[in-house]
Image (tube, rainbow, N blue to C red):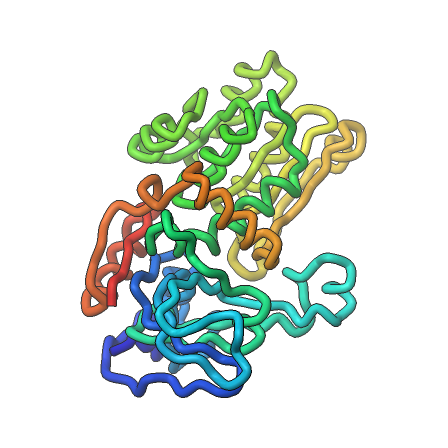
Length: 341
């Protein structure tokens, strides 16, 4: 059985053939797949320009057991527990040679986690698949992919212990930023729309909690909490032009903004050029992960510093995935659901 996306909000859980593998591939029996905001967007839109063209099995955060190996595979064997990333770079293009594997000109994506079995292609087997440490559960291991994106985005923002970091948006990704920032020794100001989100951020260690909504900018409150200067780092984890603009206006002179949340296509933002120039504000955007950050995320999870228990609050069988997607689409900010085939 697998969840096949046929188009906009058209998802069917149905019998499919077990994927066949070729030289260098492995076949994994999925033990758990986690829902993701990207998957909800794909479900709503019916496609993803770079990752998936329907009809196709989708889902990309998974952990499972190796049940078959292709010719030439010597890194893994049948019965081992593994976590596979959803992509692997070519390591040979202009961007890969400059350490920007996330921008690889031939980035190979793999989807199909919402299924009993998934084929992991040879390139991902070789460059971005890992054994799950003995002490790590399947749900924790499946969290590696989104956490790797967050760790990369946070480190790209150049945090230092003692920095004040504002995190705008408290879905699972924003909450990962909260927890990670505290691990790095930062003061965290969390901005969310709902009290439940703020409560979760508080449990994860956020030092101040601020309500931000369409009619109430959090910028004045953040300025008040920072003696008028603004925060050292602002991380936008919503993906709306308005919150992108908020982020720029809440950092101090010489501060850094990370536009982590991807806005809808054709979005534009208005930025004060004098503010950017005379305050020397650094604006960055973070997309995806690299194999090095997948490994770093797995190390963080293996150490027990971040676990799925912080971000996964329900479990459902694969047969219920359509209802889960509809619920997530109508309950923005909901935590992750573990899908068990």
